[in-house]
Amino acid sequence: MAPDAEKIGIIAGSGQFPLLFIEAAKKAGRKTVVIAHHNETSPEVADAADECCWVKLGQLGKIIKFFHRSGVGETVFVGAITKTRIFRDILPDMKGLTLWNKIDVKQDDAILRAVAGVLEKEGVKVLESTLYLQHLLFPFGVLTRKKPDKNQRLDIEFGWKNARAIGAMDIGQCVVVRNCSVVAVEAIEGTDATIARGGALAREKAVVVKVRKPGQDFRFDLPATGVKTIETLASVDGAVLAVEAGQSLLFDPDAMIRAADAAGLVVVGVRENPDGSLDY
View 1 (tube, rainbow, N blue to C red):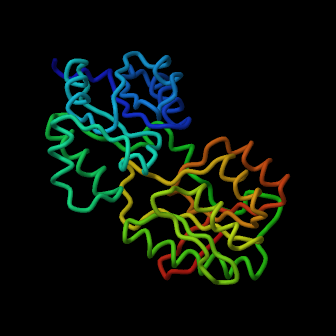
View 2 (view 1 turned 120 degrees about the vertical axis):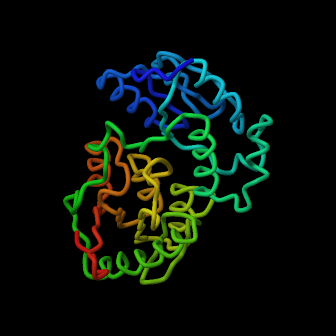
View 3 (view 1 turned 90 degrees about the vertical axis):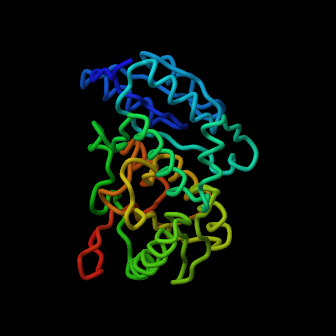
């Protein structure tokens, strides 16, 4: 079927991002054609879609056939896929297996760029995940009643440099620091698990810094924070969440800020200047 400009494909992972995107796309007059992943995507997402196909992780050929059959010429990647599932739950079809065997480095960006490349060769353009949702980008400045003190600002600056370094290597997007010492680095386990591990090692006053990877592709894998992030940080007696402003997603901002204020945490959107200094 020829592409239908009214339709937009949505390759959905977990969390609320797919539902928010469906709602925004429909307000923009688009019909939503969703690829939902077993054991990841909420059934609510399938219910909200105009069309839906459930797939297992790695079934790239099935995705392409469904999009062609439904007349999809544009798609977005929204929502997370549990990274550790690549070790136990991936069940690729022939198209997915062929691509998997061609990827030398099985890191986030390499995998997602490879999948996007195949989709675009098949006539399905991959768009930025923030399409229709620019208002969800993390704001600049201190969002909570409490502001970072002098020592916490030093930790933010120290953590920023280290988070940038691991991001450049496509390892992760977040570090946990205390007293200018790195106590945890995000890898395949994800941000919340990193905060829990790092917070336990720091014992208290942990500062979490989360940034966009250098050269981050806005089509996929944007950092995201929300109420759960705050709950995790509060559970380990952490102190600060510093996130790169305008380069990540913020879900339920009002609820997140209320939770942070109730826990006595600092939440701040940070901006890097051309000279490398930080503003917030």
